[in-house]
Structures are given as structure tokens and as C-alpha cells.
Image (cartoon, rainbow, N blue to C red; front, side, top):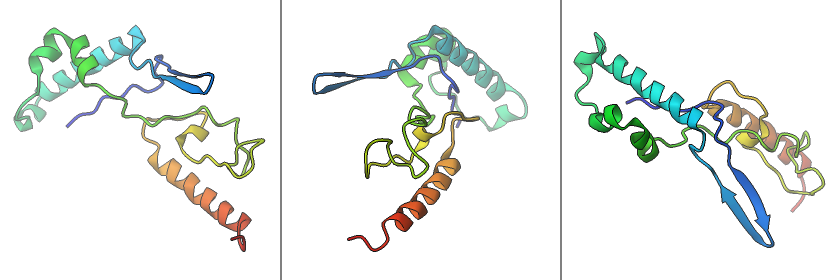
Length: 144
């Protein structure tokens, strides 16, 4: 199984407010550059799967006709974001992971990072969760 993920995509969503209504528009795959990169990745994967010695272990390439003849349609129907939502909150929290100006509201997920080297930052998020939980317990010891 292969998974293709864009790192640092140009497609960027937005969150806005309209009165009390929150409007989320992910704009996923809205950049033609992102789609072109995914097409190149698909082409590379096909070449890899057909190369020796890998090809002798490949039983089937699913939806090969669409991948080869209509890669953009294949991408739009099958590719999803495998990366974690990273960034956006890094300037909004203090060193205790508390939202600045808001008492007792915390954020500790991938949104606290401003830079990342790869799409899977699971171990980094776990480390931050450990640091946060220790700080939180220390700060709230003895409170009920």
C-alpha cells in the first residue's frame, strides 16, 4: 500500500464568522500546483510498482485505467489529506499551552507547531502532550 501526501500544500482553507455561524471552507485541492504534484507522484508510484523486483510482489493496481487516463479525476475522488493539521495556533498560546487572554482554555495538538519537516508528526505531538499534561497537573494540584 502506498500513500501520497502533499507537504506544504498551496491549497489553504479558511475559517470565518458570520454572526454566530462559523464557516469552514477547507479548499482542499484548490491549487492546480498541488494537483500537478499529485499527478507526478501517481506517475512515480506506477513506475515504482512496475519496476523490478517490486513488480513481482504487486498483485493488482486498483483503478489503473483512471490513474493513467484521468489522473485528476482519480485524485479528486481518492486522495485525501493524510497530514495532520499543522500550525495556526503557535502565536496564540503561552508556554503553558493556555490561550493568551483566556484563562483555563488550552491547546495541545499539531496546530501549535509553526514549522514541520514531514506530514506525520505523531511523535512530536505525543511529546508536547506529555509536557502539557505535566505542566497542567503541576498547575492544578490540589484543586477540585
